[in-house]
Image (tube, rainbow, N blue to C red):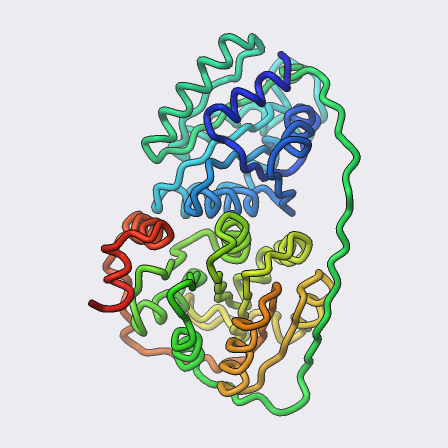
Length: 386
C-alpha cells in the first residue's frame, strides 16, 4: 500500500511520536516516520516501548516499530510496565519467519510464535492488510482499543508498504562539557538518605521517576507525591522512560533515579539518552554494588566507570559526587543551568527490614501523574499538601 497515505492516516488519528528499531519489512514505514514525525531510534525494542510509554503519559499518542525477533526484548516492559500501569501504545511488528515463506533460520521459531506471544501478553493484534482501505478501518479499530488503555499491535508481512526513500539525515554530535571524576573518599550514605536529599530539592515543575525495587519503595516512604512514579517492573527501563517523558514534556524537570543493577541491564540507553540529550533531564545513579532487593547478590558495578561512560555517550555533564552535600549542590546547580546531566553516587547496602510497598496501584500512579502534568487543580493541592 501507499506508505505516505497510510502515514497520513496515522497523523489524522493523532499518532505523531514514534520509536523503534529497524526491520527490513518495516523499513518504508520507519523511513516515513523518520522523515515526517518525531522519531527516537532506540538501542533495543524494550527501550523503544519504555520511551513511547512515557511519551503517552506526557500527552503524545505513540507508535513503536520492531522486528518480531526484537519483540522478545520488549516482553519485560509490555508485561510489567504497560500492563500494570495500563499504558496503551500502537505497535507494528514484522513477521519474519512466516510459516511457509522462505527466510533465514534464526527467524523460523519466532515466526511460528509471534502471534501466540502477543496473546500470552494480553496484547490485542491483527495482521495488517495490504489494502489501504481495509488498513484504514483497522487503524480506527486499533485507535478504539487504545482509547481503552490497551496496547494494540499490527503484525506486518513482507511487502505490505511501498517504497519510501529515507531523506538525508543530519547527525548531531553530542559532546560532554563538564566531567568531574572521583577525587576523594566516598561518604557511602544509605540510599534512603540520598533519596531524602533528592526529594528535598524538587519543586512544582519536577517529576521524579524511581527505578524498580527498593529505590521506589523508599521514595514512597519518604514522600508519596503526585509527581512521583515508582517503577514496579521493566527493570533497566527507567532512564528510557525518562527520555520519553523529557521529550514530550520539555517544561518539566525530569529526575531519573536509577540503580547499578538496573542500568547494567540496559546500558545502551545511555547512548540513546546522550544523543537526544533532553535539556530537562537529570539521571542519578545510586550504586550500592548489589541487587539488594533480591538478597544482596553483587553486581559488577565496582568494575565500571559510569561517569566516563556517560560522558562518552554525550551527557552534557557527568559528575561523581562523594557525599550528600555534593549531591544537593549538584542538583541545585542543574536546576539553574539544565542540560542532560549524569550524577553518580556510591551508597551503602542498607535499608529498613520492614520497608513498605506502595498502597496505590500502578495505574493510579499513572493517572495521578497525568493529572499533575495537566495541572489538574486537585493534583496541585495534593502536591502542596493543602
